[in-house]
Length: 109
Image 1 (cartoon, rainbow, N blue to C red):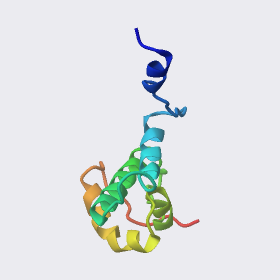
Image 2 (image 1 turned 60 degrees about the horizontal axis):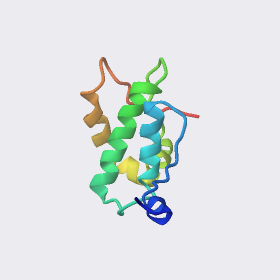
Image 3 (image 1 turned 135 degrees about the vertical axis):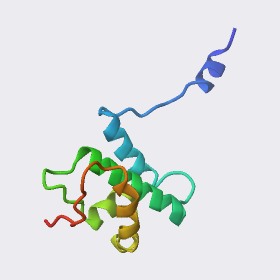
């Protein structure tokens, strides 16, 4: 029989959030910018690709305009300038995942 101390050592603490699968994906993109091993440029580029794919799946408006570079940077945790450097590559990488023409115009606020 285990002692109380042994039982306590085997407890796992969790932090749970209410939301759907897409909210979990957004949280993961945000969480990865501040937790774990420091991300390299390849990691950040992949995170930006995932963020753009998620936006296309869930948040685009009827006019299909893309999010701003600042919005993408804030979600992933990099600079808008870095998003700008990768913008054409990001658009190319997600073109194959969209059905129909994707308007590559960045939305304005």
